Length: 69
Image 1: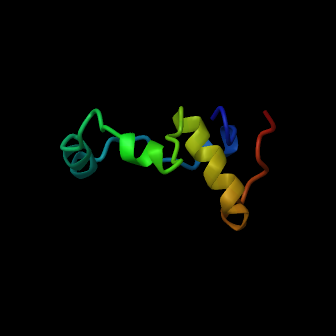
Image 2 (image 1 turned 90 degrees about the vertical axis):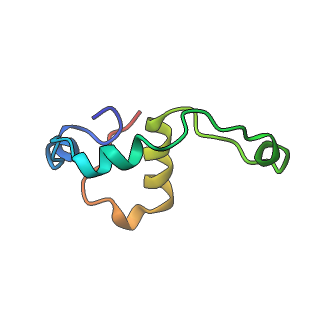
Image 3 (image 1 turned 30 degrees about the horizontal axis):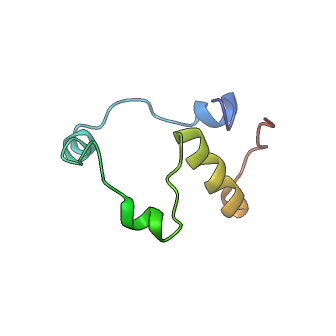
């Protein structure tokens, strides 16, 4: 809601999916990224940043007005 607004989040099904939870729970909680950083790659600082980056890089996918920040 912070990035896309109430209209966009109203389209989401907030019911947890057990198959996805099972898969995601196997992912590591911390990943060393020294090599990626040495190559100039930088991790996103928040999930909001991930969403903003997706919107910026995929404007054709945005069907609702984007909430200004």
